[in-house]
Image: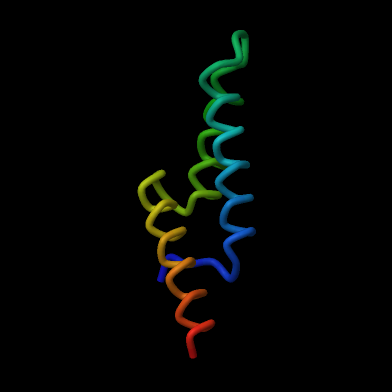
Length: 70
C-alpha cells in the first residue's frame, strides 16, 4: 500500500521532502506563498505525513527482503 519500488527512490523522496521542509521553516524572508508551496510539495513527496513516509520505508524494505527470500 505505502511502499515504493525501491529503497533508493524512497530515500531520495525523503531527502527532497526534508530539504523542502527546511526551506519552508528556516529560510528568512521567504514569502508565505513559497513556504506554503514548499510544504505542499514536501507533503506530496512523503505521500502524507513523516510517519506515513516512515511506514512506507519499512514496508519497502520488508517487501524487498521477502522477494530475496523467495
